[in-house]
Amino acid sequence: MTVVGPFGLSVRDQALEADVQTGLAAVEAGLLEATKSEVPFITEAAQHLVRAGGKRFRPLLVMLAAQFGDPYAPGVVPAAVVVELTHLATLYHDDVMDEAEVRRGVPSANSRWDNSVAVLTGDFLFARASHILADLGPDAVRIQAEAFERLVTGQILETAGPRDGRDPIEHYLDVLGGKTGSLVAVSCRLGAIESGADESVVDILTQYGERLGVAFQLADDVLDIASDSHESGKTPGTDLREGIPTLPVLHLRAAAAAHGRPEDLELVAMVDGDLTDDARHAELLRRLRRHPALEQARRDTVRFAEEARAMLAPLPDGFAKSALGELCDAVVHRAG
Image (cartoon, rainbow, N blue to C red; front, side, top):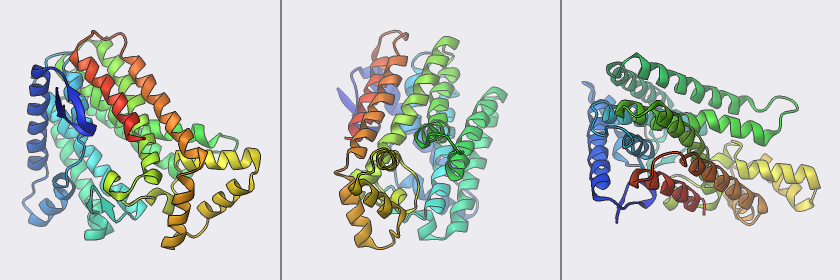
């Protein structure tokens, strides 16, 4: 049993392990090649987060989905490079919007250089992803474009907030379906399509990826409050400090509105207050870590991960299916 990929995923078959390891190594080489430019500064900025490492969660899903067809098909590795480039590009943009200082344990691009460099580098990565997609054919371009539209729509809806009368938690889960679930789903979809898997398998893996992606982001929400920077690779409470709604905070607000407990109302006031003071920010994190809202967010993470696992039932049994199921466990474990 060998540990590969994110979260220490265990692969129990030597052939599958070899395929995954070889594929991920090829993806890594492809990422470095795709981020090269004739302008040395662009190369440095574009490779900043590539060289910082990362879980390569989406490329791993491409590799595992491809096991249901021909994992050696020529489009599999390029598809994995595309989804990771797209993901990396969104990170550059996210860090500008969040004013983040740390990403993957290194200074974020916006803090190392400035916001303009970070935004333009993200755009450069999108352009390189599109160039690779063109070689995969019009269907792949359309699939990626639809996923990217959903991703951007989710981000805009998060910024706009729920319309009057809409449950904020339902709105937020819809946001995550677009903002995170779409790209994880397309990772599974492209991996299956490029391997030549049956259409029914493509549909199953796409639905699995959508739910796993939401669970993955919910685990991030929990980590933003519950972890230290060593665990998460970014400053704890970044979303909290920037006023970005996350599930634990939404559950806190719902509890305060429903029951009016003084301690809940006080915490909501802290969330809505000035969190630029480090001591106040640390105190809020400490209190949220003990609040039932955090545990409720963990339970929601488990629910989406279990829905993802249930989607796999019709697939033929085998090591690839088992590995996809283990990813559900890993996401839950990540949320504590």
